[in-house]
Length: 127
Ligand SMILES: [Zn+2]
Image 1 (cartoon, rainbow, N blue to C red):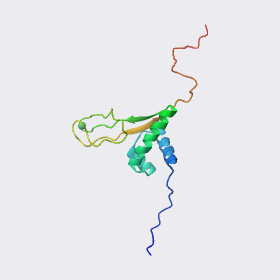
Image 2: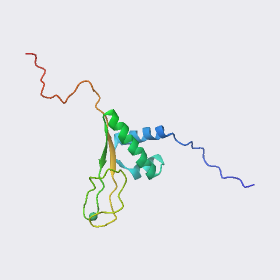
Image 3: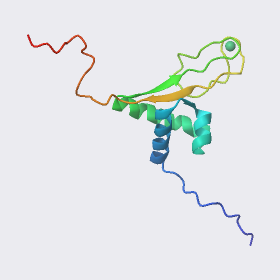
């Protein structure tokens, strides 16, 4: 019988753990999926699906996933209207394939939810 090469015992990280690590990374810096992929050791493709989930849960919590849209390196076309998070393959304007990667960061929910700073017109005057 052949001996199987022993792989180092790296347990499959639970999905939640990955998302937690992802949120941690993005809370501190703006990164592309490739950056994140290198840092967490996860395929870029998976990063995007985690980002989708993260976007939803952040939104539900009152924060948001900030996306710097990809841009064509040749003509400067910006993919602002894209709903997908992944990198487009090709520029619709000049057909160039060198597109910058979208960048991600997190805007956390406001800390004090009870105090609404939106009502800036209301001065604390007691008349
Ligand atoms: Zn272009």
